[in-house]
Image (cartoon, rainbow, N blue to C red; front, side):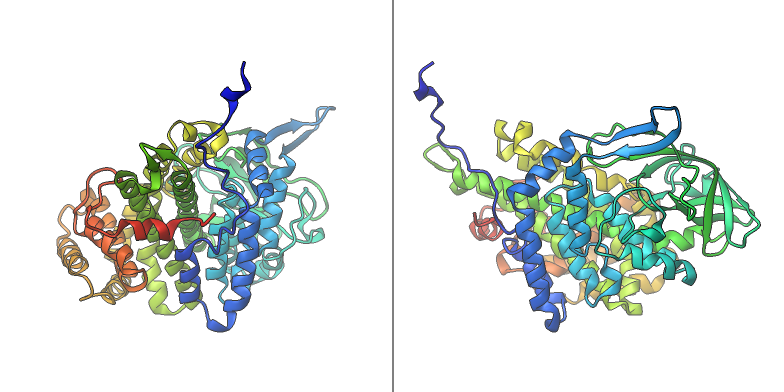
Length: 544
């Protein structure tokens, strides 16, 4: 075959060797907006260092290797002894080690920690999403453990360590620890109060033996797990160490690993407890209340993780369109493609801006901000995670057939995209949680309305959307059947308010015209043609 037929032209170069942080203007501006000015220089430096690592060829290779070589379960050793170990590819440990060393589990122990960690999580998980699961659970376990000061004093320094120490050994002998969780069961699913795992009190105060089956237990090689089980006084939270202090293995039988749609690098398992030793966390019968802050923190990570997936999909699409030529010019300059890219960029920026606002509220810690989070987190989790899958699918289409092949990385993003909408409660669970807060916690609604009201008068479409939302909230008849509609509107109004206040005029204008003014079609790429779409696309470009 003639060599001339293999001359490659009109292909975009790989998107590699760039700074994932500094090339994301919405992310950089959000950090600068919310972080104490005295912390900015150090935060920019650490996030840029992490951004260069995330955009490197090495990190991209690790992501490929971790997904092409998924974890393998070894239930027994060669002699027939039960070991229940999961073997990961070395790339998984490198990804996880980098996340830990970058401080993605230290939010609770440093100033501005939640915002800095949220930005870092958004940056680093663009390299690979699966390893973010144990990072998220390790981070989120801290507030739950604080229900027992003695347990917190013992475990919190391990969970917030920047040393990744793999292997099954007593946690007291390790430089750092990773946490998992196991709440759902076969018969209950999201209805954790239907759990049947039993907890039998032992002679030592606060210790129990657990018996039951956990349908989803993620990251089973973690050092400890927070689980729910039925004790004498009702559903209770427990800490289950993987290895006991005497060096023996706790009863933790891994029945199988889940064969999942995506998230292939991460091991999700079914686990059997049979006399498994556990420490109680919080009071008996208060399991949901004890673990609820962990759930809230992991829900926020679902928002951040989806924002990261969106951002990576958008930069891949814009990068491809910048270099690819068709019909006599660059794709990025074609009005129809520009409309699609701008629409995707709007969705991505709105998700990033909202995620950072929520993280900043965690850092603030005031009663007002805590009340705001009570409604804003489930609403954001509902909407942002729902928008992730269609966005990634449309971004993949921007690459055409090139995006449909595994080498592009886009199929992995698409398989990963639905995960955050399911994890920690699917859409209906989030919508019902919003209704619960509206009915039981009036301060939450007041805080939410005060937040969105900060932009009143700046855009007539936003003002109209706020008015419509208030009308919707005033009519509680049949509210459960229309809960999704209500929560969607709440999330859009909140995003609109943030963008009107903080984003460039062309971004806020396009968002309000489409998402709030309803001058928009049912698919991406249907923005009003009169908008400044070139500026929106240029703002989203990775600059490589």
